Amino acid sequence: MRGLDAAGGLAALRGLLDRPLASYYLLLSSAGLLLLIGLTMVFSATSVKDYAEDGNASASLTKQAIFAVIGIGAFWVCQRLPASTYRSLGRPLLFTAVALLLVLNLLVAYGRLANLKSVSFGPIEARLNWLFVGGIQLQPSELAKFALVLWGAHVIARKGAALGWLRELATPLFPVMGLLFVLVGYNDTGTMLCLLALVVGLLWAAGVRMRVFGALTVAGLLGVGLLIAVASLGAGSGERGADNYRLARLTSFINPPDPQECKLDGCLQLYQGRLAIEHGGWFGVGLGKGSVKWDWLPEAHNDFIFAIIAEELGVIGCAVLLALFAVLAYTGLRIARRVDDPFRRLAAAAVTTWLVSQAVINIGGVVGLLPITGLPLPFISDGGSALVVTLAAIGMLASFARAEPDAARALHARPPARWVRLVRRRRSRPARTTSVAAGRGSGRPSG
Image (cartoon, rainbow, N blue to C red; front, side, top):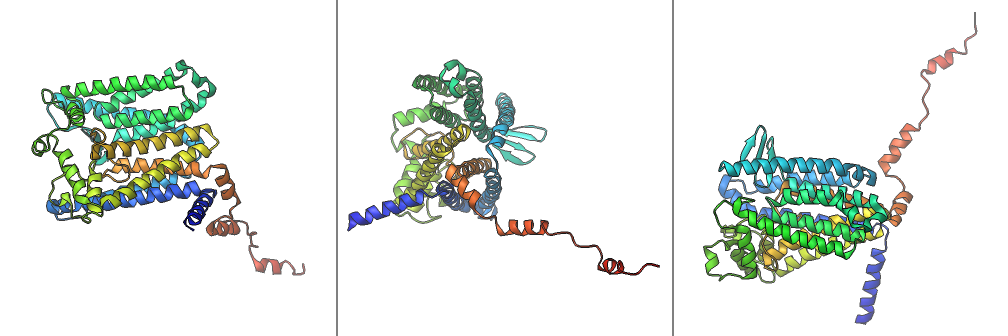
């Protein structure tokens, strides 16, 4: 009986996945639940601190909710755009991202020389990875991810069969990639690794030969080594003459220090994160009752929010979160496999690789399987521009899901919405005569 029940359950699941709009609804459900969990955990991780600072426990939640509403609007717009619009947007977005990164890096470099934590130039202010333009906080590296997806997918799709030759990749893809890696990696090595994973997903979907991936791996390792070295010169959050924090993160991963030394040393965040995960158990201690209540864990609302999930929601909460990211990964690759257009296939694979690799890097750093990089957890961590760009990318994936052959036929066969039918009915009504009296008067005898 159990075998029959399992077979029936698998048959029912297969039937649901064979529906024309299964990819679209899977994407919406997984992204929506992740967004809901993110808003809940941001409130849980910041409410105590916000109340202690200004008496408003929901200040961070309100800000995150505003960006979530903006991101939902971006999602709705992006799911309605055709592939031709995305192809035309790639180059302008890329130029914009490069210009913002140049401004950010120049201002940050000047601040390092002048021993300033933030530098202002007119309405623009730069702080490490963020630009403040007229009071609006932006993270140019997030826009660079989306721009690289659109522009890279367009370039590779246009090359077609010629992509098998290495010289076709050398221009213009590799120079632009190298420029973005330098501009992003100078301040944020973790985001540069995310860009590298995005490019790997893009080239893998294009069917590039393995030797190209080998060359990319060597170049990526050399680039990471160079970025670790320049941290001693003030790159990122490093300071000239101080200990190299990037090298310390790598060595603490390879050779974990004594937990007693971490209580007062630079590995305090790692130590407190492990304690929070251990404290959670199977079912957690409850929302708002974890380490954030005592402000023990640094950056609990941002790059270490997974430790708060483990402590407050336990193993069950972590399993639900990982399952949602697994569904998101499956859905993105399913969309990439089912669409006909090469550009859609490449862009869908790149976006999926970007989001999933960022989640893997973040969670791996928190639990100790990877070095700590400071990357936020998509949908979950506190951050405005990152959330808006992520939801816009999900909107593009939803647009591609609606363009699957079966989904497109099903949408085309659907009757229009009721309000659309009402508008069409009003437009199709014949024009009324201007005057009934005039019609009656026309029957008068002449003279």
